[in-house]
Image (cartoon, rainbow, N blue to C red):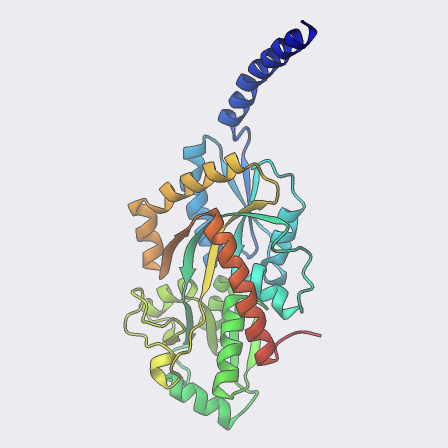
Length: 326
């Protein structure tokens, strides 16, 4: 009798608790969502985050607030996320520079564990890297650039979006491949680096194509090469590095969305579905296409596996090229 009474009471407790839990899940999010970005305003990371946030907010019924926290290849923003409450109200624009390149450059000594501290939600874009220059530069082509660099090693200047960024590391890989040495000048974002090249502070620019493509089309910059295996639709007249004498060369970046580890799977899946819808909109596709960013969707499991592969890939490249910091 007591056993049956206990079973009845427990069943009633479960039934009473279930509606409350469901209501809590349905109510998410209950306040604005903080969207961390590891680079300053004006670059590709900021562009993607604001575009996603603008379209995601209305779907969730809450504002998505972009919080730029530049520095350390984007790792500052990722460290903040790793230490945030896993309730779905803080996310980061996950970047290859912070999750794979930065840790590789530092010999794996990152302020977080990529495999332990994050809950990947989705990869959203793949970004081609562009090498360009001020129109007044004597570098009329990639061949000219390499010839000048070999003739005067350590004298040519190349601006990039920051130490450990995809632009920086992709170009360092090219330096090693071509056997040249140039002066690398880091900025806090791709936008600031582009402005510096246009104003003549530095001669060349390397970074995600979205930072340079509009300026190449307007004539403020001259495109020399892209690092993708095929030409970009955003700048079809700019040849790849591979077709200019370096077959097989490829170095592009990716961006995605991630929560802190232990974020409830129901929230992860909800945001993944909403992100899918956002990236599927014609407006978003057109906006990203104009600046050469390709939409590439990976679900949480696929993105987690891809990040693990990328960590291994960039760690090997950094070691082989001798780029690891001491």
